[in-house]
Image (cartoon, rainbow, N blue to C red; front, side, top):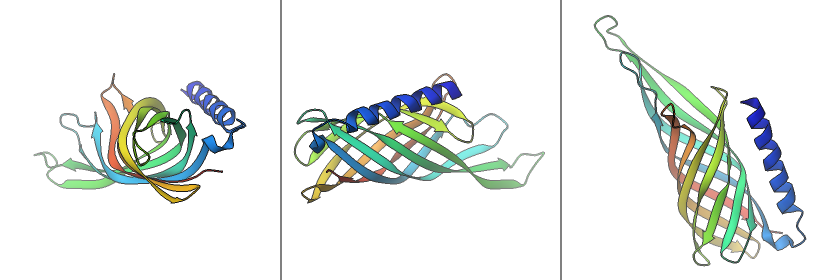
Length: 191
């Protein structure tokens, strides 16, 4: 697992370095992102065991957007997300008391999204992502997609308002993962 994480880190560093060192600086856009919303969890319930009830999540990170053509951009970066999950146990004849407590999924995610600028203000984005679940020390693939609105604040600054669905840390073979449906806000500055 750690070899895969190290390899992905090297590939990400190479991509960011390659894209940022291009001579045409207008194609590079850097930004910070914040997102929040609701989550769902798969693969956690088992017969006779505790139940898991996902609550809210939040995420923040940095974003790098590289223009590939007038209509398409490549989007990557690094995002930290934290999902709160209510774990409930008990309520059985042998253990009648119900016990509830919060557990948290902490993930670092690197997206590799393609952004299609449908118009100067409307865009669609999506693609694969790679996540590292810090609590379980697992590294898994996922995906995300959304639609958004670009609000130009100044000539070189804009705000991306981007409702998205993202599956992070999905492991189809185990039926596990965290899905996020939320609002993503990205403040972008171009040189």
